[in-house]
Length: 110
Image 1 (spheres, rainbow, N blue to C red):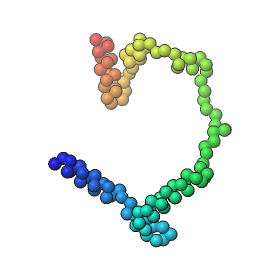
Image 2: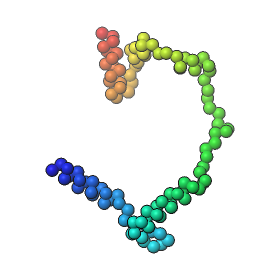
Image 3: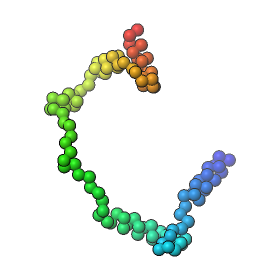
Image 4: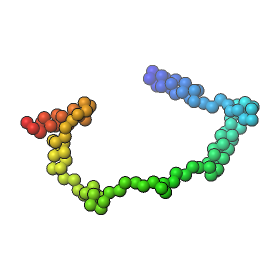
């Protein structure tokens, strides 16, 4: 029974997603080989042309960090540091993560 239902849903979706025809030069066409050729030609032409807009970042000045800051970010993080960060975290946003951190704070202090 379940497979019959799912097959009917797939068949219905296929009918909705199907391409019945295309308008070519103001004429409606329903012939599958011609439609296939039209779609292929459209996309081949679309990717053949070089009308792509390239983003240039020549005059954009990004903020940078010092070598010392980079070394600090790339260094090892100790389990002790993670524990201290969690236990000292003040939760202000009531969401799932806030609830978890709040519980951890309560457990850590007891």
